[in-house]
Length: 217
Image 1 (cartoon, rainbow, N blue to C red):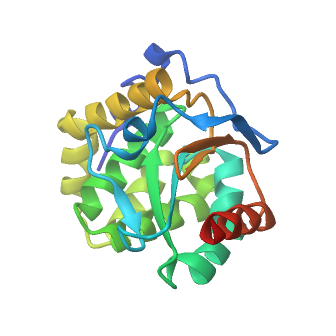
Image 2: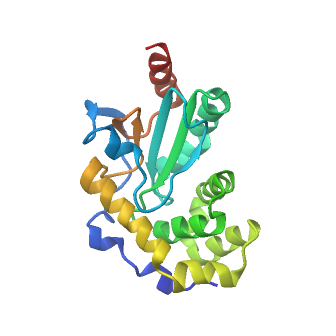
Image 3: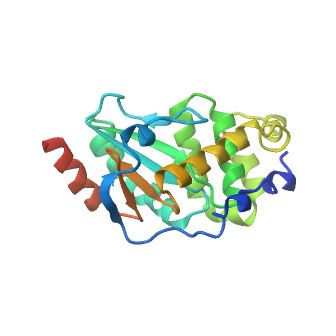
């Protein structure tokens, strides 16, 4: 099983651990963040995505597993986007980790290790982590191990990934720093819609309006 050592590896070093989720949804500047290429390319870890690569609209979400606004989005907004736009091939949706504390870092690392390159499995793990966020915050070790085992992993494999081998954890942290320093991400959830940065927690209607406008253009 993973141990408390998994939660000492430090996002406090980035200065971001104290940041909370962002409430109002707003377009920041109305421009691409450092150019479209900086937003769309994965850095240390390959992107986990749903929807066709050639979709007209690409949405990239930066989220933390312990962020309540992110959990609300996952539970109440994302399923509508998925059924309306992702499953119909109109939107490609990319999820990127932006852990704001050690628990979120461990959860993101475990999800990456358990899912490997299987995007649907990864999104299922993320969904479970958000749905059990209260348990995750209160009992992180037990919750991460339970969800990992439900997905077919073992205690030993989860421990090896999160606690013993720092490589995946280091990559998650490196991607966080890139997003913060290069893309202007400083809280969760943050979204990029065709390269434009939006910060905050929108309802489905805001996404629906934006996506429809891009599909018409």
